[in-house]
Amino acid sequence: MHPIERLRFVARSQGAPADLLVGESAAALAAFRDDPPGLVAACRRIVDRQLTCAPLWWLCARMLTAPDPFAEARDAVEAVESDPTARLLARALPDGAAVAVIGWPAQGLAALRRRGDVAVVAVDVDGDGYELERELSHAGVQVDVAEARGVAAAVAGVQLVVLDALAVGPGSALVPAGSAAAAAVARQTGTPVWLVGGAGRLLPARMFDALVDRWSQGADPLSATEEVLPLSWCDRLAGTSGVVDVAEGLQATDCPVAPELFRLAG
Image 1 (cartoon, rainbow, N blue to C red):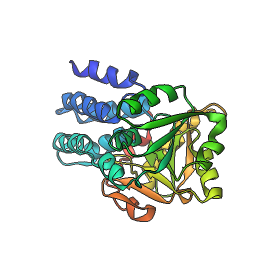
Image 2 (image 1 turned 135 degrees about the vertical axis):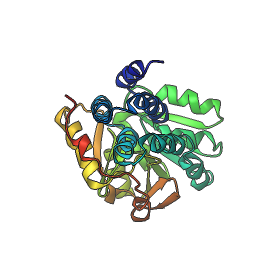
Image 3 (image 1 turned 60 degrees about the vertical axis):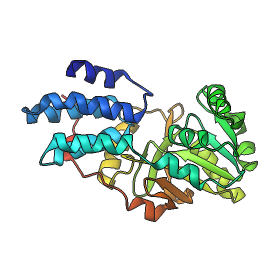
């Protein structure tokens, strides 16, 4: 595929898996090996079109700050493709637990497929609840689908809430809409909340703030499909080093600060 076509693919692939977007972006950006200004412009276009995909901010930041951007891109793609988060999360899930999830949790789904002994309550906030039920049922996982208005009852009836994060900063995370309501109910009922990050999703403050500021400029709080969740509402953070205390998990942040990404693409 021509590099420009790859960039167009990334721009229009809303909802595509992060590992696919990172791989396609890295391949497209390789075309700018001898054009540093072009690389900066292309990275800005990528994050402009995929604002809430933290692994793309992470990929571009690593490339823009590395002595060898293309060796760095290869390392980033390998890190995403070999991300152990789902496997480690699956291993950490309590035996036989009832688990609530929100929307279509990409990382959480991969973990739950591995565990046939857990029961899942899927809160359908985006119309994908029954598709999620089919996915997990094929893996032998028991699933009940709850409407978004039933989030309180769904959380009250489980032993654990697992929330996927789109991006994680030092004090908060960008998560699918509905996650904050689930976490708030969980805090009142004493139900643990595990936030799932993974490769490329942990960002330093300046990078996370740039992502959220850019996202919030075009998001209507009453209809947005994402929202900000305080990390203080979460008990554990699942990532490449396993399921650990939030403060410990944040130490795995490996994204540099690339001020070049703070400007809009021209």
